[in-house]
Structures are given as C-alpha cells and as structure tokens.
Length: 98
Image (tube, rainbow, N blue to C red; front, side, top):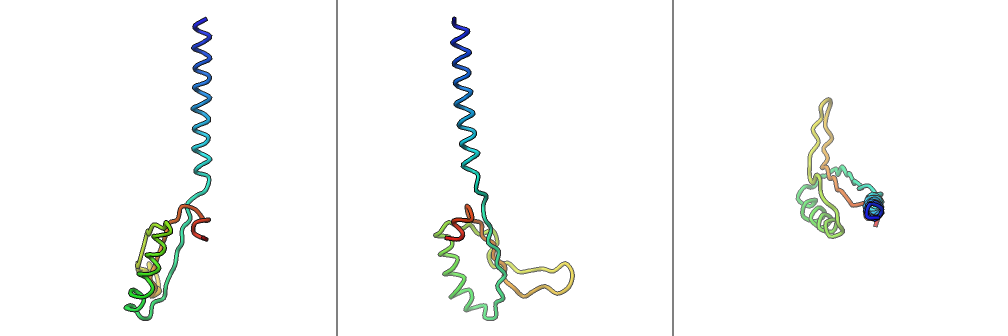
C-alpha cells in the first residue's frame, strides 16, 4: 500500500511542477520590443539640452532601457550618415506603443 501512496504523491508533485513550468512559459509569451531611431541633428547643443534630456527621462520613467544613446554611425563602405543613433528596449510592444 505504501508503494501506491508514493507513486500517487510523485504523480501529483510532477503534475504541479509541470503546471508551474507551463505557466512560466506563458508569462514569457510577449517578446521585448526595440525602438531604433536615427536622428539627423543640426544643432547639437539644443538637441542635447532640449530634446534628448527630456525624451530620455520620459522614456526611462515609462520603463525603457537604453541600449545605445547618442551613438554615431561608422560606415564599412561609402559615406556614413551624419545621424545620432538611439536604441531602446521595452518589455513588450504594448508598453512601447503606450
């Protein structure tokens, strides 16, 4: 009789672990979203002071993580665009669009 009880307990425990694992996988169903911008800046001082500081503070307050902020483009061939690169990572597309 004890063997039956141990087998039943192992089955119930296995079912519980499997259910927890499946729930964990469902929680990861929405992949992260990335926002990529190439800003053509003509007035660097105004861009940094008026736009970049305010927009990055707002994005961080909404949950964005900056991968690249203010990066420049290096061309492997040809002329590189004179743009500033910003790459933000968001938890999912819904948060990015909100």
